[in-house]
Length: 289
Image 1 (cartoon, rainbow, N blue to C red):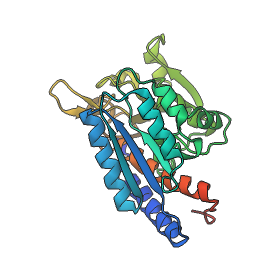
Image 2: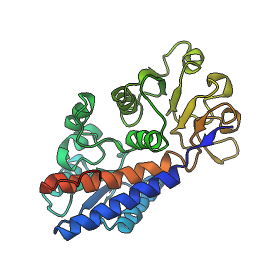
Image 3: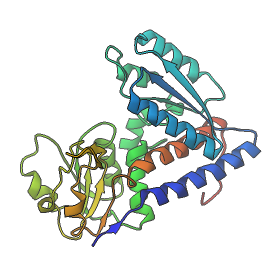
Protein backbone atom coordinates (compact mmCIF):
# COMPACT_ATOMS: atom_id res chain seq x y z
CA UNK A 1 0.00 0.00 0.00
CA UNK A 2 1.24 3.47 -0.87
CA UNK A 3 2.19 6.13 1.61
CA UNK A 4 -0.32 8.96 1.24
CA UNK A 5 1.35 12.34 0.67
CA UNK A 6 -0.66 14.70 2.86
CA UNK A 7 -0.78 18.05 1.08
CA UNK A 8 -2.82 19.61 3.88
CA UNK A 9 -0.08 18.92 6.41
CA UNK A 10 2.73 20.16 4.17
CA UNK A 11 0.80 23.27 3.16
CA UNK A 12 0.19 24.03 6.84
CA UNK A 13 3.96 23.97 7.40
CA UNK A 14 4.52 26.43 4.54
CA UNK A 15 1.69 28.72 5.65
CA UNK A 16 3.18 28.84 9.14
CA UNK A 17 6.58 29.71 7.67
CA UNK A 18 5.00 32.50 5.59
CA UNK A 19 3.26 33.86 8.69
CA UNK A 20 6.51 33.91 10.66
CA UNK A 21 8.36 35.67 7.85
CA UNK A 22 5.51 38.16 7.46
CA UNK A 23 5.76 38.97 11.17
CA UNK A 24 9.50 39.54 10.80
CA UNK A 25 8.95 41.86 7.82
CA UNK A 26 6.35 43.85 9.73
CA UNK A 27 8.96 44.38 12.41
CA UNK A 28 11.09 45.98 9.70
CA UNK A 29 8.23 48.21 8.59
CA UNK A 30 7.16 46.14 5.57
CA UNK A 31 3.78 44.43 5.19
CA UNK A 32 3.46 41.97 2.28
CA UNK A 33 0.37 42.66 0.20
CA UNK A 34 -1.47 40.67 -2.47
CA UNK A 35 -3.87 42.17 -5.01
CA UNK A 36 -6.22 39.73 -6.74
CA UNK A 37 -8.02 40.80 -9.91
CA UNK A 38 -11.18 38.91 -10.83
CA UNK A 39 -12.98 39.66 -14.09
CA UNK A 40 -16.48 38.25 -14.44
CA UNK A 41 -18.50 36.07 -12.10
CA UNK A 42 -17.20 32.55 -12.66
CA UNK A 43 -18.28 30.64 -9.51
CA UNK A 44 -15.10 28.55 -9.29
CA UNK A 45 -12.92 31.64 -9.64
CA UNK A 46 -14.87 33.43 -6.91
CA UNK A 47 -14.33 30.45 -4.61
CA UNK A 48 -10.59 30.46 -5.29
CA UNK A 49 -10.41 34.19 -4.59
CA UNK A 50 -12.20 33.76 -1.26
CA UNK A 51 -9.78 31.00 -0.27
CA UNK A 52 -6.82 33.22 -1.14
CA UNK A 53 -8.24 36.09 0.93
CA UNK A 54 -8.72 33.79 3.92
CA UNK A 55 -5.20 32.38 3.60
CA UNK A 56 -3.68 35.87 3.42
CA UNK A 57 -5.55 36.96 6.53
CA UNK A 58 -4.34 33.91 8.47
CA UNK A 59 -0.73 34.65 7.50
CA UNK A 60 -0.98 38.36 8.29
CA UNK A 61 -0.62 39.35 4.63
CA UNK A 62 -2.56 42.41 3.45
CA UNK A 63 -4.96 41.51 0.63
CA UNK A 64 -7.05 43.50 -1.81
CA UNK A 65 -9.70 42.23 -4.21
CA UNK A 66 -10.60 43.99 -7.44
CA UNK A 67 -13.82 42.80 -9.08
CA UNK A 68 -14.50 43.81 -12.68
CA UNK A 69 -17.66 42.86 -14.58
CA UNK A 70 -17.56 40.30 -17.37
CA UNK A 71 -18.27 43.21 -19.74
CA UNK A 72 -14.98 44.92 -18.83
CA UNK A 73 -12.77 45.61 -21.82
CA UNK A 74 -9.12 44.80 -22.17
CA UNK A 75 -8.07 48.43 -21.68
CA UNK A 76 -9.88 48.52 -18.33
CA UNK A 77 -8.09 45.40 -17.15
CA UNK A 78 -4.69 46.60 -18.37
CA UNK A 79 -5.19 50.01 -16.76
CA UNK A 80 -5.96 48.35 -13.42
CA UNK A 81 -2.86 46.14 -13.63
CA UNK A 82 -0.68 49.17 -14.44
CA UNK A 83 -2.17 51.01 -11.47
CA UNK A 84 -1.36 48.07 -9.16
CA UNK A 85 2.19 47.93 -10.53
CA UNK A 86 2.71 51.36 -9.00
CA UNK A 87 1.03 50.67 -5.66
CA UNK A 88 3.63 50.45 -2.88
CA UNK A 89 1.35 48.43 -0.59
CA UNK A 90 0.92 45.73 -3.26
CA UNK A 91 3.80 43.24 -3.29
CA UNK A 92 2.13 40.72 -5.56
CA UNK A 93 -0.48 40.84 -8.31
CA UNK A 94 -2.58 37.83 -9.28
CA UNK A 95 -5.02 37.97 -12.19
CA UNK A 96 -7.46 35.10 -11.74
CA UNK A 97 -7.70 32.91 -14.83
CA UNK A 98 -9.54 32.18 -17.03
CA UNK A 99 -10.41 35.65 -18.28
CA UNK A 100 -13.63 36.26 -20.24
CA UNK A 101 -13.61 35.88 -24.01
CA UNK A 102 -12.36 38.98 -25.75
CA UNK A 103 -9.57 39.70 -23.27
CA UNK A 104 -6.06 38.68 -24.29
CA UNK A 105 -4.76 36.80 -21.24
CA UNK A 106 -1.19 36.88 -22.48
CA UNK A 107 -1.24 40.67 -22.89
CA UNK A 108 -2.62 41.05 -19.36
CA UNK A 109 -0.03 38.74 -17.80
CA UNK A 110 2.80 40.45 -19.67
CA UNK A 111 1.68 43.81 -18.24
CA UNK A 112 2.25 42.69 -14.65
CA UNK A 113 5.53 43.96 -13.19
CA UNK A 114 7.82 40.87 -13.13
CA UNK A 115 8.77 41.73 -9.54
CA UNK A 116 5.08 41.48 -8.58
CA UNK A 117 4.29 38.46 -10.73
CA UNK A 118 3.65 35.98 -7.90
CA UNK A 119 2.10 33.46 -10.30
CA UNK A 120 5.39 33.43 -12.30
CA UNK A 121 3.58 33.68 -15.64
CA UNK A 122 5.41 36.73 -17.03
CA UNK A 123 7.85 35.79 -19.85
CA UNK A 124 10.74 37.28 -17.86
CA UNK A 125 10.02 34.95 -14.96
CA UNK A 126 9.39 31.97 -17.23
CA UNK A 127 12.77 32.60 -18.85
CA UNK A 128 14.49 32.75 -15.48
CA UNK A 129 12.95 29.38 -14.59
CA UNK A 130 14.21 27.84 -17.84
CA UNK A 131 17.81 28.95 -17.23
CA UNK A 132 17.70 27.83 -13.62
CA UNK A 133 17.80 31.28 -12.01
CA UNK A 134 14.21 31.77 -10.84
CA UNK A 135 12.81 34.77 -9.04
CA UNK A 136 9.45 33.15 -8.34
CA UNK A 137 8.25 29.64 -9.10
CA UNK A 138 4.72 28.95 -10.42
CA UNK A 139 2.60 27.93 -7.48
CA UNK A 140 1.31 24.47 -8.40
CA UNK A 141 4.61 23.13 -9.84
CA UNK A 142 6.50 24.59 -6.87
CA UNK A 143 3.99 22.90 -4.58
CA UNK A 144 4.65 19.57 -6.26
CA UNK A 145 8.39 19.97 -5.73
CA UNK A 146 7.86 20.89 -2.07
CA UNK A 147 5.78 17.76 -1.53
CA UNK A 148 8.61 15.65 -2.93
CA UNK A 149 11.32 17.51 -1.00
CA UNK A 150 9.57 17.54 2.36
CA UNK A 151 8.71 13.88 2.09
CA UNK A 152 12.35 13.13 1.17
CA UNK A 153 11.52 11.70 -2.24
CA UNK A 154 14.66 12.00 -4.37
CA UNK A 155 14.30 13.22 -7.95
CA UNK A 156 17.93 13.01 -9.10
CA UNK A 157 18.50 10.18 -11.55
CA UNK A 158 14.83 9.15 -11.58
CA UNK A 159 12.70 8.65 -14.68
CA UNK A 160 10.03 11.36 -14.42
CA UNK A 161 6.96 11.43 -16.65
CA UNK A 162 4.64 14.43 -16.81
CA UNK A 163 1.29 13.92 -18.52
CA UNK A 164 0.08 17.33 -19.70
CA UNK A 165 1.92 20.23 -21.30
CA UNK A 166 0.03 23.30 -20.09
CA UNK A 167 1.92 26.53 -19.45
CA UNK A 168 0.53 26.59 -15.91
CA UNK A 169 1.41 23.08 -14.72
CA UNK A 170 2.87 20.62 -17.22
CA UNK A 171 5.72 22.59 -18.77
CA UNK A 172 7.01 24.29 -15.61
CA UNK A 173 6.76 21.05 -13.61
CA UNK A 174 8.86 19.30 -16.23
CA UNK A 175 11.43 22.09 -16.04
CA UNK A 176 11.64 21.96 -12.23
CA UNK A 177 12.07 18.18 -12.30
CA UNK A 178 14.82 18.61 -14.89
CA UNK A 179 16.60 21.17 -12.70
CA UNK A 180 16.37 18.64 -9.85
CA UNK A 181 18.35 16.22 -12.08
CA UNK A 182 15.41 14.04 -13.07
CA UNK A 183 15.26 12.51 -16.56
CA UNK A 184 12.01 13.98 -17.84
CA UNK A 185 9.50 12.93 -20.49
CA UNK A 186 6.49 15.15 -21.24
CA UNK A 187 3.44 13.38 -22.66
CA UNK A 188 0.36 14.91 -24.30
CA UNK A 189 -2.58 14.12 -26.56
CA UNK A 190 -0.31 13.30 -29.53
CA UNK A 191 2.03 10.99 -27.60
CA UNK A 192 2.26 7.45 -28.95
CA UNK A 193 2.63 4.51 -26.61
CA UNK A 194 1.54 6.50 -23.57
CA UNK A 195 0.91 3.45 -21.39
CA UNK A 196 4.40 2.04 -21.97
CA UNK A 197 6.04 5.42 -21.29
CA UNK A 198 4.13 5.84 -18.05
CA UNK A 199 5.05 2.36 -16.88
CA UNK A 200 8.73 3.35 -16.99
CA UNK A 201 8.18 6.31 -14.64
CA UNK A 202 9.68 6.38 -11.17
CA UNK A 203 7.79 9.64 -10.62
CA UNK A 204 4.54 10.16 -12.51
CA UNK A 205 2.88 13.60 -12.50
CA UNK A 206 -0.61 13.73 -14.01
CA UNK A 207 -2.23 17.01 -15.06
CA UNK A 208 -4.70 16.36 -17.88
CA UNK A 209 -8.08 17.31 -16.41
CA UNK A 210 -9.67 13.94 -17.20
CA UNK A 211 -11.22 11.98 -14.32
CA UNK A 212 -9.43 8.71 -13.48
CA UNK A 213 -7.40 8.93 -16.70
CA UNK A 214 -4.43 7.01 -15.27
CA UNK A 215 -5.27 3.40 -14.53
CA UNK A 216 -3.34 0.66 -12.75
CA UNK A 217 -1.89 -0.78 -15.97
CA UNK A 218 -0.15 2.58 -16.60
CA UNK A 219 1.80 2.61 -13.32
CA UNK A 220 5.03 0.84 -12.44
CA UNK A 221 4.96 -0.88 -9.05
CA UNK A 222 6.72 1.36 -6.52
CA UNK A 223 6.24 4.56 -8.51
CA UNK A 224 5.54 7.94 -6.90
CA UNK A 225 2.25 9.26 -8.30
CA UNK A 226 1.39 12.97 -8.13
CA UNK A 227 -2.20 13.74 -9.14
CA UNK A 228 -2.84 17.39 -10.06
CA UNK A 229 -6.38 16.76 -11.31
CA UNK A 230 -9.54 18.21 -9.80
CA UNK A 231 -12.43 16.49 -11.55
CA UNK A 232 -15.87 14.99 -10.96
CA UNK A 233 -16.53 11.29 -11.47
CA UNK A 234 -19.61 9.67 -12.98
CA UNK A 235 -21.44 10.14 -9.67
CA UNK A 236 -20.48 13.80 -9.35
CA UNK A 237 -17.94 13.15 -6.61
CA UNK A 238 -14.63 14.97 -6.52
CA UNK A 239 -11.77 12.92 -7.93
CA UNK A 240 -8.42 13.30 -9.63
CA UNK A 241 -6.84 12.38 -12.95
CA UNK A 242 -5.67 9.11 -11.37
CA UNK A 243 -7.88 6.14 -10.52
CA UNK A 244 -6.82 6.31 -6.88
CA UNK A 245 -8.45 3.09 -5.70
CA UNK A 246 -6.75 1.05 -8.43
CA UNK A 247 -3.35 2.76 -8.38
CA UNK A 248 -2.81 3.26 -4.64
CA UNK A 249 -1.97 -0.42 -3.93
CA UNK A 250 0.78 -0.29 -6.59
CA UNK A 251 2.45 3.03 -5.80
CA UNK A 252 5.08 3.73 -3.15
CA UNK A 253 3.67 7.25 -2.59
CA UNK A 254 0.54 8.93 -3.95
CA UNK A 255 -1.30 12.22 -3.51
CA UNK A 256 -5.02 12.08 -2.75
CA UNK A 257 -7.75 14.25 -4.27
CA UNK A 258 -8.75 16.32 -2.44
CA UNK A 259 -5.99 17.02 0.05
CA UNK A 260 -2.91 16.45 -2.08
CA UNK A 261 -1.55 19.01 -4.53
CA UNK A 262 -4.54 21.36 -4.20
CA UNK A 263 -3.71 22.90 -0.80
CA UNK A 264 -0.12 23.50 -1.91
CA UNK A 265 -1.03 26.05 -4.58
CA UNK A 266 -2.28 28.73 -2.18
CA UNK A 267 0.53 27.97 0.28
CA UNK A 268 3.11 28.64 -2.41
CA UNK A 269 1.27 31.83 -3.41
CA UNK A 270 1.72 33.12 0.14
CA UNK A 271 5.41 32.18 0.01
CA UNK A 272 5.84 34.07 -3.29
CA UNK A 273 4.03 37.14 -1.96
CA UNK A 274 6.34 37.32 1.05
CA UNK A 275 9.38 36.83 -1.21
CA UNK A 276 8.13 39.63 -3.49
CA UNK A 277 7.95 42.01 -0.53
CA UNK A 278 11.51 41.12 0.40
CA UNK A 279 12.83 41.62 -3.13
CA UNK A 280 11.07 44.96 -3.60
CA UNK A 281 12.43 46.28 -0.31
CA UNK A 282 15.94 44.85 -0.55
CA UNK A 283 15.46 42.65 2.52
CA UNK A 284 17.55 39.51 2.79
CA UNK A 285 16.19 36.41 4.45
CA UNK A 286 18.21 35.01 7.38
CA UNK A 287 20.32 31.95 6.69
CA UNK A 288 18.28 28.75 6.68
CA UNK A 289 14.85 30.40 6.34
